Length: 165
Ligand SMILES: O=c1ccn([C@H]2C[C@H](O)[C@@H](COP(=O)(O)O)O2)c(=O)[nH]1
Ligand SMILES: [Zn+2]
Image (tube, rainbow, N blue to C red; front, side, top):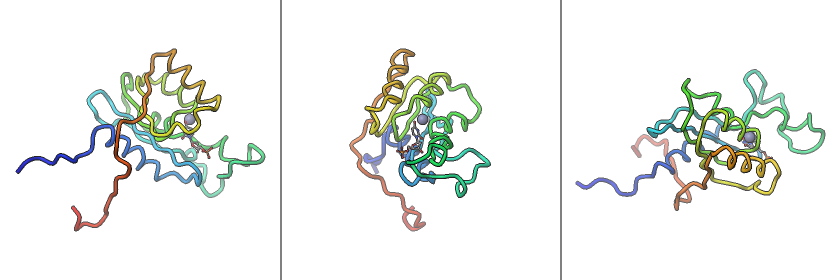
């Protein structure tokens, strides 16, 4: 019997893990997941946008508008930062990070400082915003490359039906 040919690529696999991580997010508007991979294609960290440990998802705001302190923005820990902080305890030098959303300037700083050398993103929906322009400026200057994920796949379905294994 010949091997399967319709298996997913490394890019699809790691972006898939990033997207699945994002499904843990409680943010009603934008769910972001991130996955860090080392040079041997081993996953060494993952995270999603969520509140810091000890800050209840039910007590903090999730809105986007109004008084800054009554919005989610000052409180949410971004997916990329969480993935860096959640790493398995290794030096991230030379790793790459898969993220559903292009990293903001704060995440870009953390990515650069951690030694990650490549960013693979799915959406760049905030490309025109200053924060994301700053990210690209920093990445270009610091020698961190970035590219859109390489895939033709539109959707991957997961079944939890044991009969499907
Ligand atoms: O680099 C980033 C940028 C943003 N996020 C998170 C932070 C928020 O929870 C959402 C953005 O919310 P909007 O409603 O789209 O303004 O995405 C992140 O994890 N990483
Ligand atoms: Zn960020």
